[in-house]
Length: 212
Image: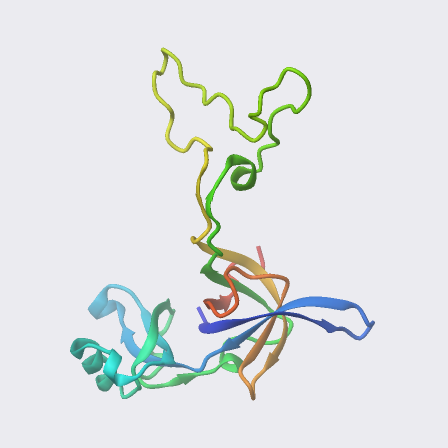
């Protein structure tokens, strides 16, 4: 599997050959560096570890400083493991750019941390329709109503849709169209929206269900 880390810059629009506006998310993808290679014979699985966003050496503890020094790369803020079929295709210290991973016109999966919404009610969190708002209804229009517990089973089932903390979770958007790839500037344009706020780090990989 090919993948790369990037920073979500925000959204804009581009125009195709027929002058149709296409909403896109712009991502500054890479460069990433291979900091470790894991092989099935030694580690039990095949993967590579890649780093993203250089970090001042003073902000890295000694064990991690030694890890980066052994790989011959600068300390980084983010480390991610990517499963690969053949780890021998990579070398420690190798630079990975967006053009090495994705091509224009293909499909990608994007994983990131969704925007945090704080504590929310059931209407916003679970799309409840709310209670009636005409005569005979007290001011409980946005309340969840009965939660179904009585003498049997005398408890509330786990997973019940109720108010609570919303957002701030890892979300993956599948089969996003790759509208354009700018290899020189390391810019990636993806059709539509992807998880997370502007400035957040996202993982972009080849779509695993593109042909399903």
